[in-house]
Length: 521
Image (cartoon, rainbow, N blue to C red):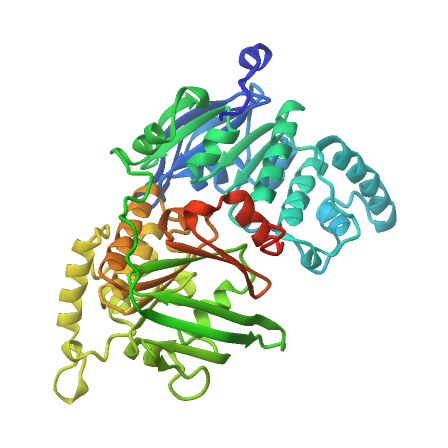
């Protein structure tokens, strides 16, 4: 259901934000091209587009991180110059980033006033901020203990602190970048209630998200960007997800995963009482039991930071653990010799890590080098005397780029010069094309545009249909529901419960993700 429609007063008022003819180039790349947009006061306005469409650049110009090459910015009908973020704040603009800008060992109150102390003496500033904070909490339902330390509160409350920071600085316009990426469904619902209250109090909200369901649920209007240009602005109540997806990519997109029922075979991966401790001795996995069979996808749902990363890392040979793990009936070592990534690949395990840039690619290396990594000792890539056959590696890369529609299809291009979606395709192509018995895949479409999401999902399902076992970790519940044949939910290093997608819903999974027992959920 779309958000409430703007009132007549909102429609006739001057736009809260008006951008006229905004252009920005980085060398030969035209990030924004003659963009004009009007956002009315007291509305929630969504901005969507593929990776590289120019959304972040446009918002960075509005918040003073970049200076436009051409064009004008008007706030409430008045032309303004925004050379930096301080000027944006002075103009009444606040921004809540996808990755929060908080000092972890500071309290909520200290984070609120940081950079806006208002004088040389801190005690009066803290007292004034505490009074203001209590008023803001009461007015907007942003309840959070001012004396809590940031590192000791959950991500949902941390996000409220970011919103409170902006409101404390008297922001009239709020920009939120992918705000639900680290929230449980219940926390996302609470955020939407807060945004509606902000809108009803006359604030203007700009929501950048790739989740079409959220656009339909919370926004009043939505602008679509493609290849640096604004292609459409529509009232949310007068459009739908299919039309928005087509406007984003320029073609019809299948929004649901088209797959036949699974036909599970023998167990491929068996995990019993798996335990992992971090460098500080904290137990991150606390007795994990699970099984993945041939021809099925087991999805692991959960809020980030509850042990999913450690699970993938120990199974992929990136971290040591304790317990019992076997693949096709063969026990795998969890520490010492034979517990590394090279040994795991030899055991038939492929791994698409959660963070492609830090763990899946070397950003300064060419695409052909990245596609060969981990498999560079294969016989086809090694000539006489163990010398690597670079020409064969490049031919292999050209084939994979063609099959996985990597753009541009240039083996010599460095990884950092591909968009996020195409970086992900390079990693997925490298791992899936090795025909593994088990695919470990973490956050397969994180930061990936809707066209690439459709393609990556198709490749995962095709591997399942070829009789392979897949362990999928994703914080996106839509993705978990669409791809998984079974769903297990993790919280605080444990499996809270297992469900069939057809026999559960987001509410039940959300309770499990929040630590409720299976019976309570």
